[in-house]
View 1: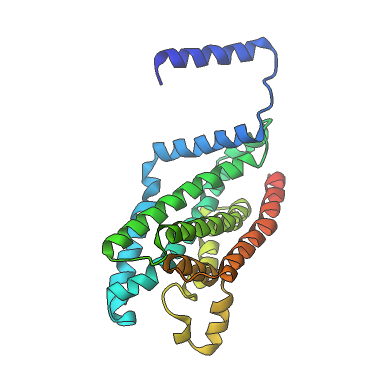
View 2: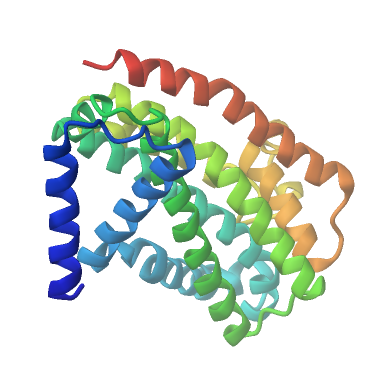
Length: 276
């Protein structure tokens, strides 16, 4: 920003303060866009916080492909066709935990107490952060798919199928983020929040169809895997990428995502308003 622009903003601020007239209340869109800008500026100032959406997907994909590919599918290239959609789901859903961690840090530092005193649409502080996290999920998805294509992944569903798969993953992860946001308000430290989040997400991720075909599992475990939300999303994403998706698979992803939002979004706002 140039010095003339800074002077202009400073003069405008002084005029607003000394005029005695209260500024108009910002609209919901304006206040939400302000918090989106705040989150983007924080990424600009601390670019290392993007490691989880750039470096981690590369590590996960390389490690699981070359570590388990030969043992599970006989070759890494065949296993990659099965693994990539699943590990895309795993990576993006695990990144969603950081939504709650960022909120928990802001609350413990007292920043959100200041936000609640402002004449703004109250949910904008939460929704602004969640929208920026969708950008983070998109970056992680792009990194993983590009690396997969370089390694030999060939989606039979084409570009449309890949875009549909990413869209389903983003919708599901945005809805799932409301759970971590609620926990970010309840938990008294980021370590406690991380522990609880991992206790929930790790069993859901590893006892699913992300890494192996459920038909190879014991029968008593197949029942849990079939109703696991992570398995439902992985089925739909895998189907979109390979051109075998069904309407039922997509509908179940929307139903589960809708339930997350209907249950946890109002609960989060209730706790947010009552937080001291």
